[in-house]
Amino acid sequence: MEGKVIQEAESQKEFAIGIDIGGTNTKYGVVNHRGEISNEGEISTTDYKDIHQYIDALYEKLAPSIANVGGLEFIKGIGVGAPNGNYYTGTIEYAPNLQWKGIIPMAKLISDKFGVPCTLTNDANAAAVGEMMYGAGRGMKDFIMITLGTGVGSGIIANGQLIYGHDGFAGELGHTTTIPGGRVHWGTGLKGSLEAYASATGIAITAKEFLDERPREDSLLRKTPHEQITSKTVYEAAIKGDKIAKDVFEYTGKILGLSLANFVMFSSPEAIILFGGVIKAGKLLMDPVRKSMEENLLPIFQNKVKLIFSELKESDAAILGASALVWEIKKEKDTTEK
Image (cartoon, one colour):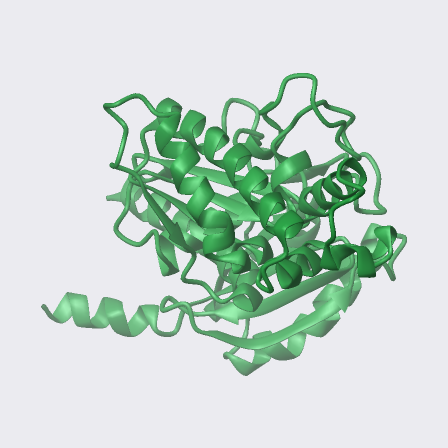
């Protein structure tokens, strides 16, 4: 009992740094074991053409935060979520929305600068680990995290572990084909991928297509110039009863539900946890998603999988997810040493 008390007291003095590298801004925070964030802040990702200048700026911004919790001896590690982040190599590889091209050894650069271990993975995987440790995935060993925002990201937890695959890039469910020969994705050139339909970008494209295909039908969406239509515009029209806007969510939900059915049948998760701005559409999206998913499942999978929303605050999720990588690595290390 005494040993447990000492261990808990020691863990209260341990902190992880979570860093979320976005295309525009990089957010960071110091996180304790309970998922409480302190010393939050951000820097511009785009202001630094040279990666070493970026690392220096990050260090300068974080130095006071590290001092506030007692210094580097209390920082157990740094976790980073980044686009195209490879967990195995600690590199960011050919990220299309970052200005640093090619393969960037980000984890090594950060670790060398700060003097503590650094673990890196892609942003969607980080979100899944954060959900498992702090959110709706607590206590679950098998679930899929789907992020529905500007794009569609995903992280797959199986038997309590994140699936990375042999090369570190497993879990790109947003780029799986849901409509063969369908809509061309604006970034990848792939045809008919889930992201081309179920993302906020995809919803806006669907709305424009529906308006063009149904020119004689009245719609509130016609009051907005084509190029200014967003998923939010569509949602606002839908909750006012606009038929075309509601049909956009019906169509999107049907496609997303079909894809979720495929994901369920390949990994048999306890739940699918949804996260991101698109889920604010609520029943407009989720009712057709549930219907479509169940209709496309084998009977042995039907009515078993929970569709639930993330419990993490959208503003905190990226930092929490990145910091959770540190505790996961520490847990694995402690288990190995016993």
